[in-house]
Image 1 (tube, one colour):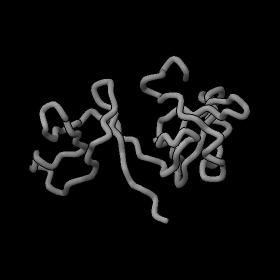
Image 2 (tube, one colour):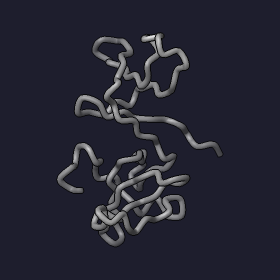
Image 3 (tube, helix red, strand yellow):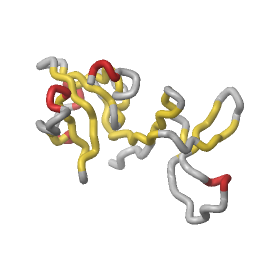
Image 4 (cartoon, helix red, strand yellow):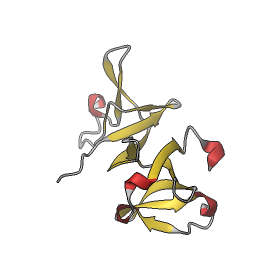
Length: 129
């Protein structure tokens, strides 16, 4: 089974889920500067140079909510909170209590996603981190 490759972009204090992410070899071509986001009200794609790109992990939480990089998850069994990160070559969870020390990294794909619930993200919920 192939994992879905999709992204979201944090830009102008909101997430855009309809976005294009990539690179161009022609730096003079301003029409193909990435990332780009779709503005539904204007019905057009626009450059989002100050956007922060986050990738979908391919997993869903216990409520079937897609889990993205930068999401804050709660382990409902033990009441711990984690941030979803991509570390070197794998998805990982980082306990919020140990952010300064960068400790307690957990291999994301060896955990059962149904034990977790997306409760926010690192941009909308800065008070939680």
